Length: 159
Image (cartoon, rainbow, N blue to C red; front, side):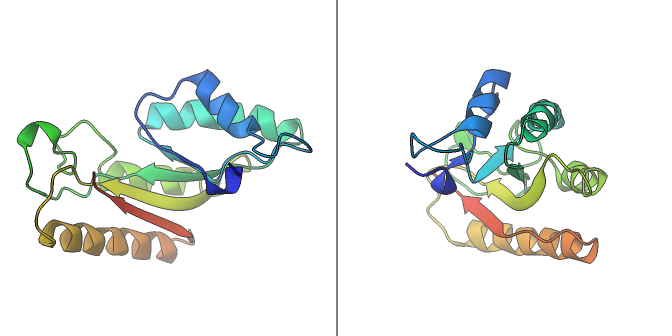
């Protein structure tokens, strides 16, 4: 599969998995192009990606696209044990923390802020949580745009 079609999401990416994503070559010949986008889940994961991307770019590799998984604080319904869209859930970053990271690394040379991601849960039977989450993500993107950060990919997901 071409790297340009791969978004690497998920909690707890290891340093080695990040390296593989950076070096990915779906064509099996020629220069590795890496993947389209890394969705980072935490500041710690971003720090690992920044470290590995710095080495990768210094060796002539492509600057990776990055998104932050934000937690839009939306009650999506479904079973409470599989909900992921509220602040008290363990996935993604609250908007204040995510915004601070986007701004802190706005001029970083080893990553490119290309996206934002939000996942609101599973087994959702109503459209209203999607509307609410999308409205919040649109607001976040507008705030980033005002700060000079322009994102190409907005990912709003549920299982």
